Image (tube, rainbow, N blue to C red):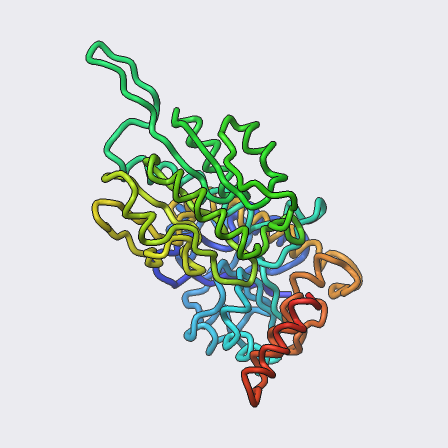
Length: 399
């Protein structure tokens, strides 16, 4: 099998899907690796580094797509790349299928077998393949550093002959991988840290990092979804949550929001009134910007100033640490690839990881993929809104 690694071409992307260390592993396993020239230059990897590892360097993306049996990338294909994908080939990358249904349909028309790094199940065995966690961990870490540059004050407590400077107050919304990384880094920098999450089960993790856990009084775990992810909560809970955040946010110097619900728009946790209640000079880093943002005023991939409050909606923070991000992603990708193809039955759909990450099998939607039902909705026309709602209700309970 020939594996192709083209250069990432979307704006602000600096990562590369494989690094020389994983190229060596692919070659040792019997695969041929072909890399587009300068694919790794923004991750500080030269063509000669790839050649020494055993890769063949090709001069253009078109050559890579033409010669490869399987394309390895960080991002889903652009329109330009889609035109180059050959019929019957395979494709592996991050892929938000419910946002990119047109791309799924295009891959179907080319009988492509496609896998998404977004869909790795949260199991012990799959941890070493979990690229979403490795990349969001970077985003959480970097968000604190960026936020500290936005505010015009110290992060730690400072006692000087001229007086005492109080530590910055930081609120983390969402205590998943990114949120916990943000908590840990904010504490390392000396800030006073608070965290909120709809899942009471994360309280112990938050407090173990030295942060204060703020919570909505509730008798249930209604915010806990499958695989430990958050899920949508009731209207009553949302109202209590909004009041809690409203009362907390006005005293904060930094807000880092990380709340995401799989396959849904990001929940709005910070409305315009809350932003306007914040102290002048404060900053919001919205790590959910790519799915609409947790702040009502967030604009994806933009930094705006609203009444002297900075709202940073950049969605590409892992790419600001390209060397480490590429290293972690390439290892995750190799581990998934090795899991799928390192056996006599490379498409063992009885396997949870293979079945969970496989979107298309030779152009056919994989029935084991959780979004299968919703993809079918996107591919059909419904005669009425009522019929469409019934279809979505069915999916809600079937997945």
